[in-house]
Amino acid sequence: MAKEILMPKQGNSVESCLILEWKKAEGDSIAIGEIICEAETDKSTIEVESNVEGTILKLLWEAGDEVAVQRAIAIVGEPGEKIDVSSEKSEQTTSKQPEPAKEEPTVEVIQTKPVRFNSESLASPRAKATAEAKGIDYLVLEGSGPKGRIIERDVVKAAEGRQPVTRAAFEAAKAANIAIPSIGSGIGQRVVLSDIHSDTTVRTTESLSIQFPGEFEDTPVKGVRKVIAKRMYESLTSTAQLTMDATADATALKSIREKFKTSDPELGLQNITINDLILFAVSRTLLQFGSMNSHFLGEKTRQFRHVHLGCAVDTPKGLMVPVIRYADKLSLKEISNTFKALAAAAIEGKASTDDLSGGTFTVTNLGSLGIEHFTPVLNPPEVGILGVGSIKLQPVEDKNDQVRFIPHIGLSLTIDHQAIDGAPGARFLNMLCKNIASIDLLLAL
Image (cartoon, rainbow, N blue to C red; front, side, top):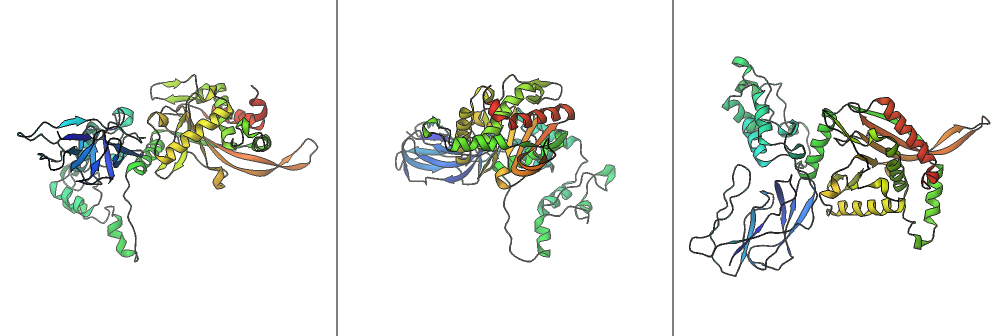
């Protein structure tokens, strides 16, 4: 009896996945546990395993198609078995599930399980379709769905607040791939065809490329990159961000790091890094400043009793932020081991939803790239993020009026000024600098 393989469900917030590559072709045999395709959620990739064995009778989608979770992606059965398949795409950019042939055995639905997963979604397929139909840029909208997801009602609401567009104007803008003005020259500021051809209309790369001879390559913004772009934009437009810089004496950091490197391998301390020490110091300092270990939720601020520390990781798919849960209760060695495992999973595309959610404060480190200070962007609803820079020698005057060059590490703290004032943020940063300078004593507490 023929059986369907479904796109596996990816948590409560993910509604669809993008098929990147088929690992099997029609007519191929497939065994239980074999990978049938690689797909991309809004944050990374998954490999979809088969839970059945047999011959692939039909692949219902092409690479590049977006498929809703729990929708059929392939049918497996006996070689030569006849099936009746309909694959008409709906307005949600998914297909209707293949209906069983009236004279053939009923198709059995087989759940598949994801091997790799890490994602939060951007906008529902229905919202995207409605946005295109109404000429709305959904990337600038604020989502009201789960975890800020943009849903159809958000697009409809945005459309109600803009001036009407004539059909001719809309079709012309769509054909030329140019933006539709928010107001037009027609009656009641209606956008008409002449507005679309106005010199003030924003032109796309295609219309400008003729002015710049030479070859070029366009890369679609999708998947993780699209999510990052949206979140960075939303972070800067929905929060009042203030960044302050400081440096901390890194003498103790470097000294204890050297001791770890030359320690007995059986202790398991040789791989502890400067970044691990910073994470430890942050986890303990946040306990002293609970307001920094909070979420700003508009009408209220939620302060957490424990520190769930987000750690930014540069991956081939883009920036990801796995979370060290209960970091305040972990030893330095446990923080180091946990972060390395989470980072490896993120880089390999194996991080789970839980790995990438639930943070209460974030640390991002560009020190290895030689950056001394930078402006880290908040990860809402968190109210704080720490940027860690490189270690540089700085002149310091001692008690004898002698100038010595002491290694200092750059720190950049961004806070949401809606929830945290500058003075409390500065006090947190000042205490963090002190704790880093005396990291050997902090480890003893």
